Image (cartoon, rainbow, N blue to C red; front, side, top):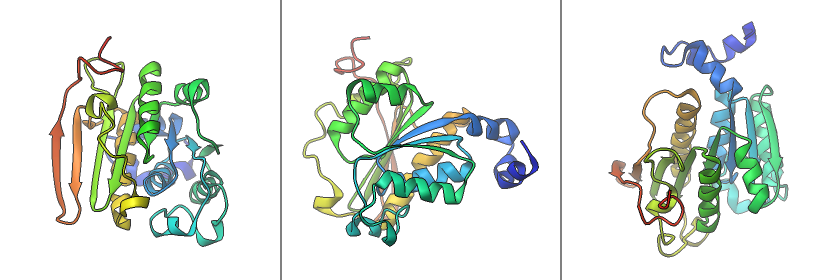
Length: 248
């Protein structure tokens, strides 16, 4: 690392759990962020600020006025632009040393597998069960860790999955049937700072995965009731009947 790099990340390097070795792992690491909305905004900004070397931004949508209440990576001047372009510009303004790749379309099949296989960790910031299930299956095939978050109304949740590795449950072990109605914040609403809280936890869990430090939320679902500011943890195990990982 040169002097500017050491200075930029000095407050992290000072932490003995991270040190220079941990920071180098971040600089050498890569993450794919699926969804550049309310959750993807803080995830992308914090991972870029922390020094994750390569970010792949995936989103098929464009910036709309109703997004700006919570999707802090976009600005009013970005209205009508592809979200991946707006997010890329914000990331590079914050940290021009990050390599950013954009995918302005929905991915499935071989194209999805290629993106997942090409990074160290996948961050699910989407709001659709079909996409979440597809990401989970792609991560299972590639044996890639998946950092999943969700937020709606005043409630949030985060977990980390290592599908295909050991006895770790996958996303389908927890939501085998899609969890009932596929509610989104478009239909039911969401309070703005909640996305920042959940997204920040996702970003930190992603950093822990990349640096291999601490204890990640594997086999644990972290739940937030933001209206009463109460955190709860639910433990769960791999489902032997899971349609994705139960047969291995």
